[in-house]
Length: 72
Image: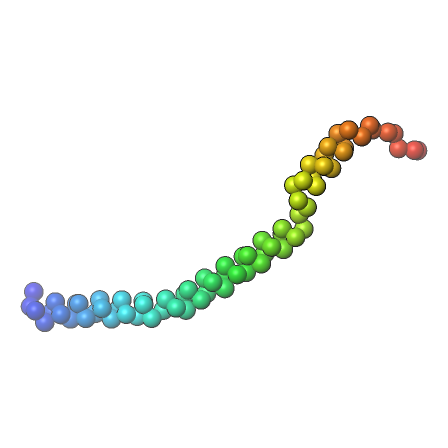
């Protein structure tokens, strides 16, 4: 291989790496936007779920409350 051919290959690879590096900020911004959307969805789900202590108390109340037949 001639030195010029090696340099041309190296130049091509360096150009490709620089191009990839230039796209990274946009990709990072997109990932952050997606992450923010995911966090918003999780918060919305959490807002609709009662705390575990409330669920445990309800389960305990249902367990200790005798079943009474409903009036017909």
